[in-house]
Length: 215
View 1 (cartoon, one colour):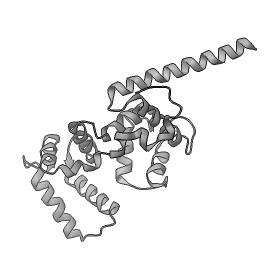
View 2 (view 1 turned 120 degrees about the horizontal axis):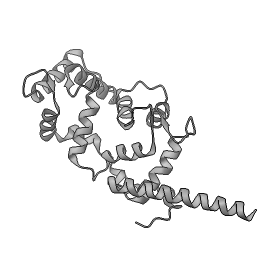
View 3 (view 1 turned 135 degrees about the vertical axis):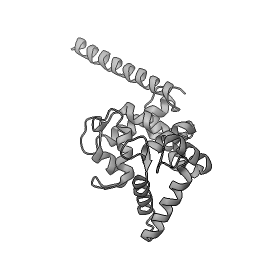
View 4 (view 1 turned 90 degrees about the vertical axis):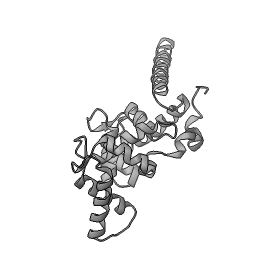
């Protein structure tokens, strides 16, 4: 009996140390502290068990977390899920969750935010934001904002944006042109920052009560 208890304790100790090492590695690669990553782990556990309790966030769980519906046809949500799913295997692992979410940290580099936003708008992953992709994103933004504009107004907005950004006149926006457009209009990446990620352990205080890691 004592040997069995000792073996169980030893396994738990190894598991805790393994998770600490993994969290320490994530902390070294992102703006998050180890305590903040521990808080994110508890959030991840909650999200990943919404429908299937398997320590993975499935697309339905992702949509449910963002929109309280697993069937939401939202262009942003679909695209963000695909970008978080770094391995492209249809699910989000904890490491992918932390590394992708770190882009939205207030201390993340502007260059990383610009790059992520470009990939967000590059819907077909061609390396360019083409006119129809630009229009789809404008329509999605209007839908999210509950705004209704005439087709002519929308077309005018798309044409104006493309004319300003497409510096070489090839009818699409490459990553360098996107960077220059953002430099002129920083508000284009405003949604790439989530302020409360700066004080994650304050936003989710109950998640750090069980951590044994001092900052």
